[in-house]
Image 1 (cartoon, rainbow, N blue to C red):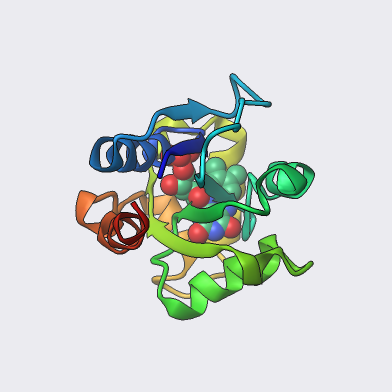
Image 2 (image 1 turned 60 degrees about the vertical axis):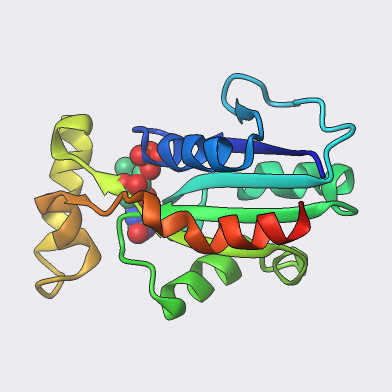
Length: 167
Ligand SMILES: Cc1cc2nc3c(=O)[nH]c(=O)nc-3n(C[C@H](O)[C@H](O)[C@H](O)COP(=O)(O)O)c2cc1C
């Protein structure tokens, strides 16, 4: 089966996961910020990755808008977040990003991402410092203030195994 990997990344961790998935499957990868309407004809497997902004996948609106083009294919979606995505958090991102039924028709994975203070502008750093004052130690805003890096190739094992079972 032919497949393609589409992604939206801000600082590179989602792109890194997309590249690893591309290497493991042989699928081409496309940056949706550069090519908003890629040709999907002839692809049976569509993998879409995006970072999490305020609890939701940034790519959720692209997926909704393009759902009619991909709904009859095998659709895999992965989120990349600052929070460590345990099962509860994975479910939270899935429900927040796809409240309209699409969520039950995709295979959804969540990967831990990367957040470096030096990649952020002064306004965002100030907002995070402010938000962290109201958070308990170990909570998301605190982790983002301190910085976090959970990007590891081993995190894609589950999605790769599932894709390989189709190929
Ligand atoms: C403005 C902003 C809001 C964010 N909101 C969240 C969030 O609500 N939950 C979360 O887990 N991570 C959040 N993050 C962290 C990113 O999802 C994380 O750093 C991710 O790895 C970024 O992916 P990228 O490197 O592909 O851009 C946020 C980051 C930014 C810059």
